[in-house]
Image 1 (cartoon, rainbow over the protein chains, first blue to last red):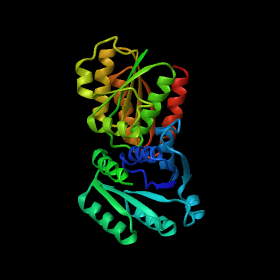
Image 2: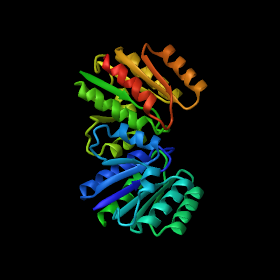
Image 3: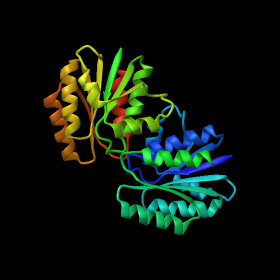
Image 4: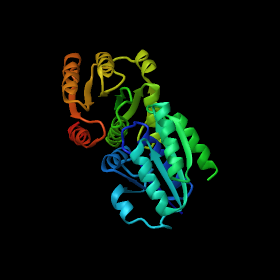
Length: 150
Length: 150
């Protein structure tokens, strides 16, 4: 089984730790995990997992999208910190047409709600959402619960 | 040989990835590494290194400081994203009175310069500094160079 994880812009300190955590959990469940993001986010993942213990293939967002076809992955996870990430996730989800999880986070409650609405309008993803910027705990708990039932 | 790493407030996305990277490098050089930070930063490190492959002991900043004595560690590394971190590093460095590295980072060049000045006034640390927020590469290169000569 193959999973694709999309990261957004690396503005929030919680994103890369949570992405590594989720990748590790998916690999322990037997998924082969590919992580795609912009170059800055990819570099952060490489620095945080220098031996590649928790992550698998890392690939640039645009080249990943160019080569993507339905059936390439059985599971899609999108980290959604902003509107651009919502748009990317909708595009990837539209092509893959498979089970999708959106992990939506923002420090401001109103902006978070708007992001969740946009994800729900643009995709059929399961949505995990929490106000988060420094503290990964609320999202980690929700990710754990989701993955237990995957 | 024992090394202590102090992290600042987890506002910047580069801090936790670079701290994990530095911890891993120090452990490969034979150091036993303790990392101390506020609870949010500790949680981010735990989430990003779920099996504790790259990090060793993680401990709360204030309890670490309360128990600290000269001679406890042979090497001190401080990540300095703001004034509070500068003050903590000066306090820890004053007690330990040992070889110290300050990794100073800020997205704004003027603020970075002021932080570097404050670290140089308050400690005798070697200083590595770079404008950084998303991109860990400039600091990673400087950390590599420093550790090669350690």
